[in-house]
Image 1: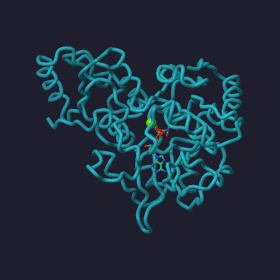
Image 2 (image 1 turned 180 degrees about the horizontal axis):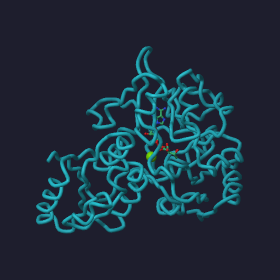
Image 3 (image 1 turned 90 degrees about the horizontal axis):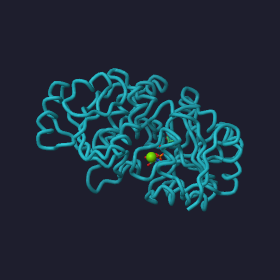
Length: 344
Ligand code: TXA
Ligand code: MG
């Protein structure tokens, strides 16, 4: 057990930089979710991330930079499409998978030969990278399997006693992890969207001026025995302790189904949009407003954690549509439910 400090502002940045240079793991804010950061060049430091998270050793980490000058340290190539995307979306919530350079610790890439790289937009994240003077490997700062943290308090819930410092950068603006695209595809194949996020498929296509392919694992579980394009897709994610089921149908059908289910399953909850809560026949935890996917993204992980705080055992949620940022909200809900979907 270590004592976990919580610091904000310049104090947090300075302490984080000193700890990172000494090979420690630090909780840092980003605009997407909080990250668990370590020196991406230092194998011992990176191993501490896996230990603190309880993360499977075959799930690679994203490397964070604050300046394009750091790229040669991380990627072996930065093709024209990567340049276009960086210009449009960095700093911001987009991760690109590219061929890895030599200086990155093998634990970061888990031997894949590729690496995810992202330039975050949160001012404290950028100041920490700058002050530490190194690229930072950082997965989301949750214990493996639980919802990603969107507040410093969430990080403390999961990491207290496991890491020396959490830098408090207030609530994350986006609330869901970055969009992940792979530019390591066979010649002539389109850019592959591995994880939807705040940067949408439509926005990527507008910049690239060509279609983007959406990985099958965004909407469905990995078929038995198949090797994933992104190892993270194998694992159940973002999962509350409650058994969450996604219902695919109209609001009226949802209410009718839950009304019936409540007769057999006392204590059941629903996850729904704010304006729907009063129509629900059972207690509700809300996440954002209908028609406003950004507000849903922003509130979703806190809502999943809230289910746990309430010791909810069974919960239902309605499948949202997949337009724009909605694709990311829908993907996280499906994964939180382990792809358990009932068509109404
Ligand atoms: O917004 C974010 O991306 C946050 C913040 C902290 O930056 N980070 C984050 O990291 O979500 P993590 O480790 O929770 O998710 C990284 C995802 C995983 O699904 C992993 O499998 C995938 O990216 N990934 C990382 N490197 C990869 C690679 N070389 N090839 C394919 N997928 C990769
Ligand atoms: Mg994660």
